[in-house]
Image (cartoon, rainbow over all chains, first blue to last red):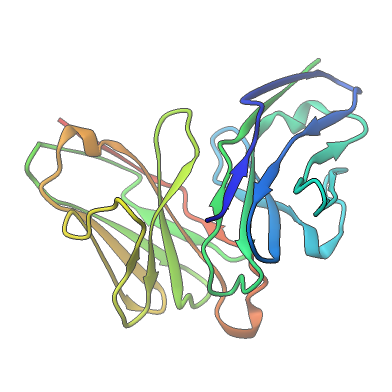
Length: 111
Length: 118
C-alpha cells in the first residue's frame, strides 16, 4: 500500500521568511513524488516533480529515500505563495499507476 | 498546458435521482482518466481509474453500481451517481494524463463538480 503523510494542516509564515512543508511517504517500490498546488478559486496544478529536479516559483523539493521524505522548501516566502499544497506519490510506472495524495497543507503568508 | 473540463460545475438534485458528470480532455487524448472525491477540508480520495474502451478500476470501498463510470472515447469520461443520497454530496474532481510518449506523469485536473443532494 502507498501512503502520503503531510503532518501540518495549516502553516503560517511571514513574508520573506523561509518555508518548509513536510511530506513523508510509505511505498514498497521505487516512488515518483510530486507536489501539487491549489490557489484560491483555481484547480489543482502541478508545482514540481522530483525526477525533474527543477525549481518552480522558487520552490525546491529533494527526495530523501532514507527518511522517506519529500519536503517542499522555499527560502523567502511571497504573498502569492498562499495556497493549498498537496504532496503526491505514484509508482515508477507512472504512466499507468494511480496518484495518491496527502491530506494537504494550507500555507498562509503573512504580509 | 493540457486542459481538462468538467460539466456541470455545480448540480443540485433530489434524493433518489441520478446525476451525470462529464470530464473532457479538450486538447489532448487521454486513455486513462481518474475520478477523485474531496470532502470539505480533506484530501482527494481516488474513487476509480477510468480506462478508454474498457471497464473502470474501482478503489476498495467504492460501490461500482453506485458510481458508474464510462470512458467511451479518448476525450470523454463520465461519472454517474445513481440513486443519489445526501451522503453522496461532495466535490468530484476528474484528472487525466497525456497518452503515449507525451505522458510525463503529470495529472491535469478539471475544475471539479460540486454535487448537493437534497
